[in-house]
Image 1 (cartoon, rainbow, N blue to C red):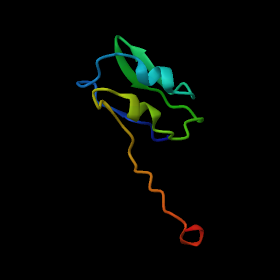
Image 2: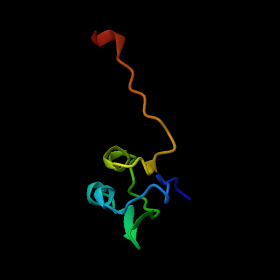
Image 3: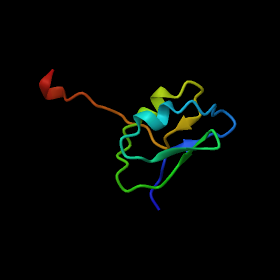
Image 4: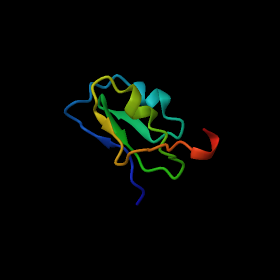
Length: 72
């Protein structure tokens, strides 16, 4: 089973912003609450987490970008 973004149902207000930015179709609104559905195409872009105005979505990892010392 693939890990999907975590949804705090108590914080979700059902605005649908996350659904509109999810390019893989991994989020759907059900009874005005977002639900993550497992899809193979989810590439963890984290856009859903970024657009959520209530902080109801969290991704179970952190992306760290290191600067290449050779290109400085």
